[in-house]
Length: 65
Image (cartoon, rainbow, N blue to C red):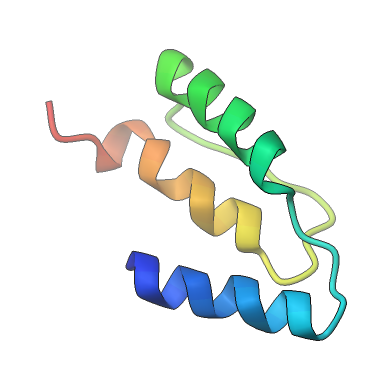
């Protein structure tokens, strides 16, 4: 998913008062995922899946090394 589409999902969730991951929490998770380079991520209890969509770019298969 491109960043423009991801931003649309975020804005829609905020407009509809759907809880999504906060930006500061997302920054911490991105640093962790960038270090761990996971092959899989399981997220349980997603509302709109915003954080899962954000995390996908840190999956080992999506890395350009």
